[in-house]
Image (cartoon, rainbow, N blue to C red; front, side):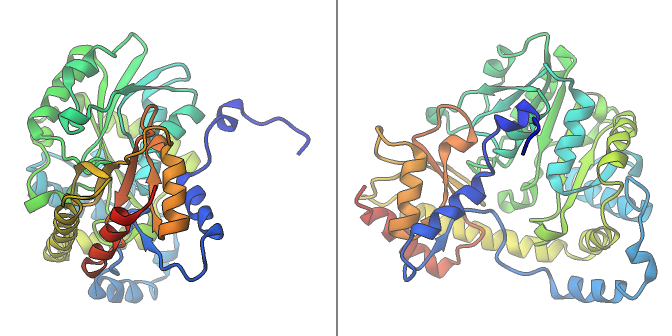
Length: 389
């Protein structure tokens, strides 16, 4: 290559999951793999949803563009689900369907920020968020992880990080990577904090359908002016096991969506119709299916947490939730990458090192429960217990 490229993107690290999977090339070919790396449900979409989509393929309209924001009937169906799940006062003009939650995040950031602005993230944070911010020339400011506090965000600590350049507080709840569910009271505190400083609270609720017992995540959508200081990023990819369909969503005020659609038109035009039709079927027919799979993930988490906490394990579970566990490894002089690489190559345990989730997190590892069946959990825990270090 004989030309220069953007310095911002040159400085961003490579995608962590691809890096970690590359370590397997040096692992023994006969070493059975236990995949705790990527948060992908191992179960397929509902059979009735797949059958419905097969019928949709015969309709020539399925192959065409929709409006940039998505089909009106799909957004209306989503609004009805938001009313069931959140008690939301929401209308279709406050929604934009996106290519996964990642594109919804990009839309939110390009509407909110200019190069040189700041966004506060709660560490540990989903690695794609600071990667994207860095590419856009936006400075990520990290609220530190407090192990003794269980990884919950502290509104007072976050407020002290706000400067004249701050444009948003960004929070993933349930957390990726810790699994921690931020209590509704804390979310409401953060929304009031954002309102006092005239900035946005941006919630990434990709895993909201996996909150234990199906509890309501918060009541922010119940007020008529909920979009004044609140922007939501959502995904139905995990909810309906449609990760490859890229079933994302941005929810915000009508004015915010108006501006987001300018970027949407230049970036993706629209979410594919087939994905939209899958979402519509899901929100109208699959509430019980979603609840059943949530309970499956809860059982995996509960079994793993119970077995992992038994005496004799050198690794320590510091935070966890339905989809993830945040684990401290026992070797202070070793980086998370070093430990994670050895676990992959010597113990057949594929997971992510803590430092990809923010600065100062080298003592930690992230485990995901999407790919591990209940019957494999005892063997996974045994490998952690017997790992020589």
